[in-house]
Amino acid sequence: MDYFNYRDGQLFCEDINLNELATQVGTPAYVYSQKTFEHHYDAIASAFAPLDPIICYAMKSCDNLNIVKLLAARGAGADTVSGGEVYRAKLAGVNMKHVVFAGVGKTDAEIRLALEAGIGYFNIESEAEFENIASIAKQMGVQANAALRVNPDVDPETAHEKTTTGKKESKFGVDIERAKRFFEHYGRDENLRLCGIHLHIGSPVYIVEPYVKSIQKALTLIEELKTTGLTVDTLDIGGGFGADYETGRTPDFAAYAAQIVPLLQPFKNAGGTIILEPGRCVSANSGILLTRVSYIKMGGTKKFVIVDSGMHHLIRPTLYDAWQFIWPTKVAPMHVPAKRAMEMDNPSLEVCDVVGPICESGDYLAKGRALPPVARGDLLAVFTAGAYGSVMASHYNTMTRPIEILVNGNEHRIIRRRETYDDLIALELEAEPASV
Ligand SMILES: Cc1ncc(COP(=O)(O)O)c(C=O)c1O
Image (cartoon, rainbow, N blue to C red; front, side):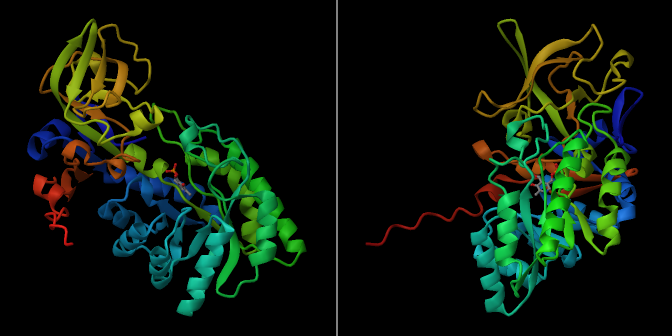
């Protein structure tokens, strides 16, 4: 569900006509809908309300300060994975007690920054990391909370192996047997209070069963630890809930909650804290990428639609073989899409590859895609691009990144200005002659 809809053949974001907006702000542009962000955040908060969870928005999915701010204003905490994200969360006004810090390679400087900021939990990935954080906390004379990331060895059935994390062979976390030894060894540390279990099985997970299985395993582990005098009072179930890349693709939050809430209710009632780390399900449908057609080119019988964006702005198709719905922003009545689907039932479409300007054959947004006829100068929308879009953009080929716009009703705001070539070279000091 989102607030990107066609009115009289023209695509609108909320009440803003995107053809007019693109003329004003230029392309490529990421355009976000504030109402869609709010809708998804509120929907997850309400579905899981019986657990009164801390909802740590996964900033990695879309970390623009203005977006984190608007979610923080609705009560969101933050799931962070770097010192930079902790810094952003603080600037955005997130309650630092509702910040979790994950990631397998936290540096000493990042750990200090997070301890100084007073974050809620470190999500711990290994014994070596636990010892390091505990020792830094001791040196600084502070205390912090930690949750151990546990691999429940459950198959999340994600679309791609690069987005599967909860299996035994994953680089993340430790398996359940090792988790028991971990708690026995470190569970009584005074500076780093090991009081939580962290799960994140992958993304996107379109079925509820893997969550159920992994939570059941975590609850069993918690019970076993209790018998040895070790208390786990926090369970972080991670993120990974799906988004509608195709219309109706993902279960709604109520469907996930219907099975997850009853499982966790006894833990909550016994005084436990539940943490969720949703990213994509909040941000993906909240953003689109607007790109203009630069050229049409035939290669044999194949038609290429060459646009002013590509893998450097949205790498998901190249990196994950991800499918994103793409459609012109101005269409004849017969081409107004009734739904976003892999197979569009319309005989007048033309099959083409939508490719970018980067010097890589992997630079494409879609391959073999049926689209209404398009010409140079037409504007295309890449839908469901709010998550893992702008955040993964690069300057490859010395290309600037897209401008970012936040729409609210009939108003829009530039939330990341368009870069200049001077921005791109600003950090590259002129080479000093080598001194001998
Ligand atoms: C530990 C952790 N939590 C949460 C997320 C967010 O996942 P999603 O955006 O699919 O909700 C990720 C994504 O990689 C993650 O690694």
